Image (cartoon, rainbow, N blue to C red; front, side):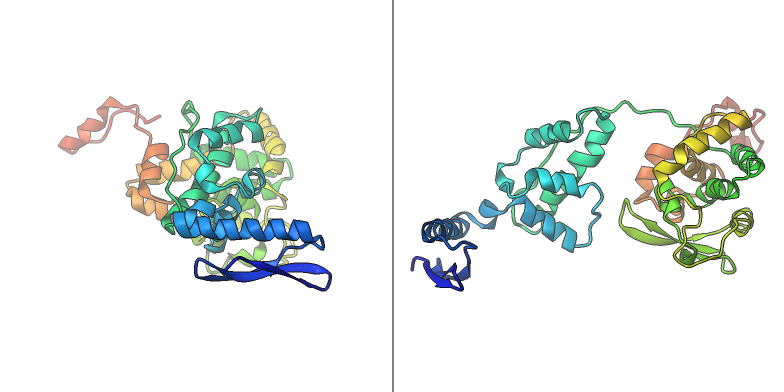
Length: 327
């Protein structure tokens, strides 16, 4: 039976049964002709969904709502959602997603295009595919030239921290030690509040925004001492390191490096140093991943394992130590 419209409180509403489904709702208009068009569109979509499956009328907005409700990371979603809105998911192609990335971030690197546009759009659609609402989608990533990153060593961290203390920046020294000791990302560390820290228990709760999980990190003695030396009232909601975001660390970090006369490494190199140091100390990749908050051991081995540039390491096969110093 076709949908009928009825006026209530000066607004037209539709109701009726289409393809065995009872439908009712508001047209959000007081104009009868517009209301009739709205009701006809609702009826047409209902028939299309009945004949072609739920994916035929699935919009990106609907898929995104389900993705959010499932508790997945909302990082970078807003701009992608605003771009697609009520676009039907079956009409979205991999090429269209690449074009979206270029339009949203025209002056950014390929790595940013992949991370902030392609990944979230693909994740939303493929989550809908897991619910059997549509077909999965594959999107070709923009080519990114892999950079050789230098992990921070304990010697570098100590030199940086000493200079930060000398500059009257105990919170920056503690930040460096904390990232190196826990493997925390810069943004995760800056979001740490005193409510997340238990100095006597030697633990800190880190909210991992990238994978939308929380983990309890162990705090080593040098890290505890650095945290204890930060001037603070220890208010539960107060940021431990006093930075509003990871981005606000950049310039002051570079200034300390310049005055210390050490290699220019980014804050992320401390997290890099955590993984590389643990691996070189003989811990397996799965343990390193769990301790530092990586999604899996494969990621650790792919991006954080570095071969020692020392040909004499093979002496270990005969029970003797390397005769060279690793780089």
